Length: 205
Image (cartoon, rainbow, N blue to C red; front, side):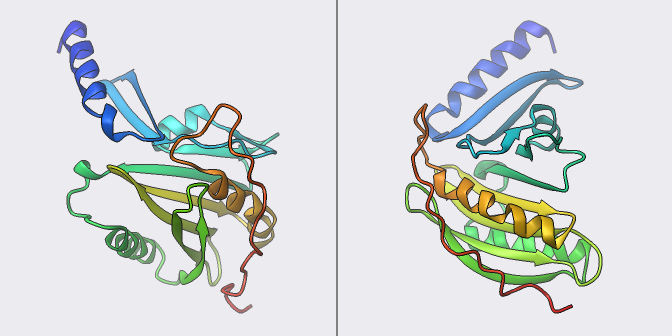
């Protein structure tokens, strides 16, 4: 494929998605197959955290790490994905997405303890369904929240190598979702109040 033709395809593709993007950032960059396309939710600022651009491209997610750490070496990270519905025709609803995700976790680690957690409301008052994925012995401590926006399913995740790291960063994760809006202004929404953190679903030691 010539570079000129690749650029034409790129422009047509991006413009064809224009009406369905909402607050989804879209990027295209040269790669081994010509151009690689990635998209993820545009996230509000959360104090003490920054975006890791290289990791975001690698994992096709908006990846955040604590200031002073990288996504690769941080004890705890957060990331947000936007799944383009036309590319996942087998999933028709958030409920089906959750079911698929739960099965994926269990296939990877059958001992994962999956429990419902309190819903988290975005700045637009969309209520994200939320679940904890905790290890019985070894593994990451995670919480995953699910929503949708126009032609995308949204998945927001916090993942930590330790229970203490998870609990310490959970307020930032909650704030990330509470500040998220379909349309974020340059200054970002001024919403800092957080609901009490629900830790009742931690597996017994």
